[in-house]
Image 1 (cartoon, rainbow, N blue to C red):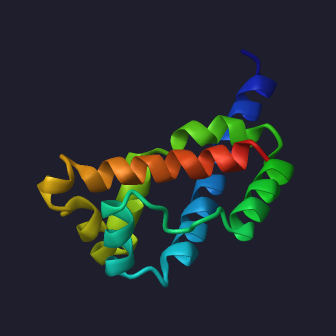
Image 2 (spheres, rainbow, N blue to C red):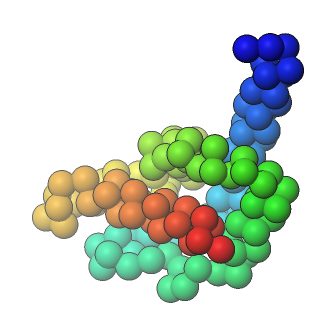
Length: 129
């Protein structure tokens, strides 16, 4: 591996890190008005917080793809349910508590499984644009 390849890999890693932080900021904007009761209702009914993917998610997806070209495909796998839950725990502790404390009669880890479906759905919507 030559110096050029090492520099390119380093630049890609910096770009991926920046893109992930952009996504975290975007997620915070999306969740700022979500109430724990709204989240609870979505989880127990297996519904979505958004009945359709909002235009701002689509717009953001297009921006990521245009700005980072093939980079989105490289960092998409790094956006995991575990990572999103960590962000929510740090930035929105009440919502995190709601997710992890869904009563067991709705299923073991119902909130986490629901969040996993949400993360996969949004990523799929962005990648299919």
